[in-house]
Every structure is written in C-alpha cells, then in structure tokens.
Length: 460
Image 1 (cartoon, rainbow, N blue to C red):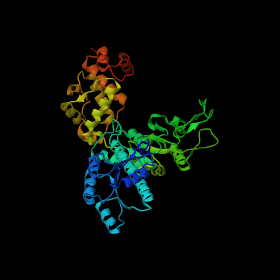
Image 2 (image 1 turned 135 degrees about the vertical axis):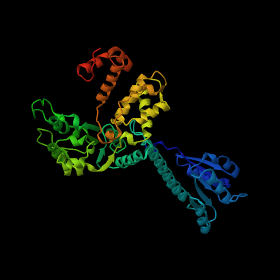
Image 3 (image 1 turned 90 degrees about the horizontal axis):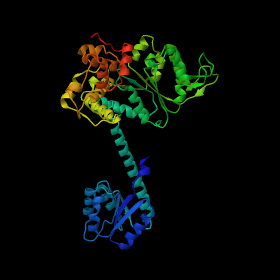
Image 4 (image 1 turned 120 degrees about the horizontal axis):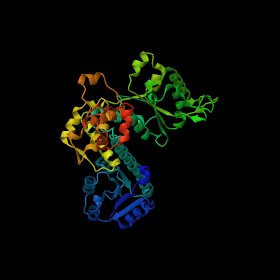
C-alpha cells in the first residue's frame, strides 16, 4: 500500500485576528475534505496548540501586540517541519523577500487572487509532504535491508556495501552475478533483489544447475513437448516459462556444460524459448540472476565457460564474503538464526551467553552460514536452559588457518548432519536410542544413515 493511500489529513492552522477573514480562509480551505482546518484568533491559543505540529500555518504577520518575526521564530522552533504562509494585507515586495529569507514558505497578499493562490500553494505543499513521506518510507525500507533474512544480517562494512548493491540492483532490471563460497547465502541475496524489485508480484524461480543431471537440464530449463523423447509422456513448460514476467535464479551457473551454454545465450539474445520437440517459440520476459562459487573468468580462460555468455550475464557483481570475514556480524546472524529456530519449533526464546559467543567467534566456518545454522540449531536442541552455553556448542574440528583460507572444504548440509550424528554416536557409546533422544530425531533416521554408510557403529 502506498504512502498516498494511507496518509493522514493535512492539518492547517489559521492564525488571523480578523474574525471575518479567518472564517473566509477556513471555509475556502475546508472545501477539500482531506483538510483539517483549525482557526485561532489570538496568539496565546495558537501557541498552546503548536506542539501538535500542523502541516501548514497561515499567519497574519501584523497582529496587535505581537511582532510577526517573534511568532515566526516560535513556529520554526516548536515545529520546524511546518510550512508557514504569511497572509498579509500589505503587498510589500521587499517585506516578502525578507520573510522568505527568514524561512517563510510563501507570502500571499490579501486581494482578489488570494483564494486561488492559497489553494495552489497548499496543493504544492501537500505534494512536497507526500514526497517527504515516501522518502521516509524508502529510508525505512533501506534500513530494513540491513536485515535481508536470518543469514543476511550485518553492520560490518563488507555487508553494508552489499546491501547498497542489492538496493541498486532492485531498482533496475540489470542482470546480477552473485559470487561467494558455498553456504554464504547467495540465493537469499537473489530473493532479496527480486522481492524489492518491480517484479516482486511475479514468480521467483530458482534452479540449482549442479543438482540436475546434465541430460535433464535442457528439459528442466526450456521445457519439452509430449513425445519429444523417450519418457516425455506429457508437455512440460520449463523454468524460463515458469518465471515469465519475474526472476529466474540460476545457481551454480559455472556447472552448466558448454553446449547448453550456447542455447542459453541464444535465449537471452532472442528473448524467446523453444521447448524440446516444439516447432514454434515462446516469447519470454525474464530477469536473470546467477550465482557461482567458481571464478568464471578462470573458467573462461580454461575453455569451460563461454566468454560471450559470461559478459551477457555479468551485470552488477555482488561478492558475498565468507563468514570468517564478517567479524561480529557472526553473532548477529547466530542470534537471529536461534530466534527463528526457537519460534519455528515452539521453543522458549534462548540467548547466547558471552562465553558461548567467544566459542562461536573462534571457529572459521568452512561451511559458512550453512554450518553456523547447523551448529546453532543443534545447540538450541541440546540446551535445557534459556541460554546457549559453551557446553551446548558442538563444532567440527578446527582446520588450520592457512588450510581454511586456501583449501576450503565444501560440505552439504547432509554431511554436516552426518558429522554431528557421528560425534554423538561416538560420545554415547553407539547407543542409537540415546543419540536419537539427545538429538530429537527418529531412530529410523540414524539406522538409515548407518545403512547408507553415512555414519558407522564401532565394534563394542
């Protein structure tokens, strides 16, 4: 809902000692039902209500017993956002210029044109007020962007730069390339851009290129017609058509094979897609956001990624720093993740103690935010109190600093879960029932992990 749809009535105070003229101004201004007009025939009653901060004041500058300059200063001191209009019986150009220098918004002489001039000026002031209100709303929205989700919270300089880029990306339809290590929150950035763009009421469709077998990816992206290949028993629209009018997020774009890259480039150039087995094309209007943990320039040099496609997709580049480079933002993220997990699981709110915070800060998180999420959620389950203490925090063995910096080990969330379950099996002498109870998971889940050799039971 826009500011204009929710605005309050425009409040106008009329300070005029001439009873007839004050009623004349009040009647004229009240013809607009959106105006709330209050009339004051003496300064004292006017000053007693000035704390209400009216939007507009019409002021008779020459009131008996009061200097107009004194009243003007009091208005500006008590309500600096109020627009003051001097309505005077003296058509004095030099005085008008002097008043404008003092901060009066406009000077209106009492004559046959007063009504029309007053009406016109008030309408322009209302436009200014609406514009300021909209700017204030935008400022609040920008401030909210400093928290774009559980994993995208931060006040550090790197994250502030990212929020600025997200804002710029949201205000245009330019392509965006998001880079960063696995688990840093690239899809969350893509969602934030979409949700704050003019396409927010259209679909956001995410495709993880690395998660789809290459032989199925073409059909997944572009769709197919019935009977176009073995197993194509029905027509299927692809992700491009599904995202039509909205945003298509191609995660891990660096994993796409070179042949499919050529077809993607053609679609981006022609802005139309051809389903597998179809004779015609379908026009599309899709904004493309891409993400990768790879260095695409290196992939171009190696011949693994088309240079023309690289520049076609590039657009605004947003690089998400790893968690170890975000300083104390880590604690903000951890607390937000903890609050979300407790709420989702109907648990009482918990806080992280200072000692536990120190433990969290010492770890380098090769799995980035994804790893932190697993650690925090497990700590919430293990804690029987209203606080998370160091004893509740289960961290993988710390890698050497130089190894972490140069040889980042990438793990899936399933691998982190398996690692945690294995630690508990080791700790509780491979008693599956005890581990299931401690971790609040089904014993069948652990047995399944054993069968799939994701965890093991040592000989007792």
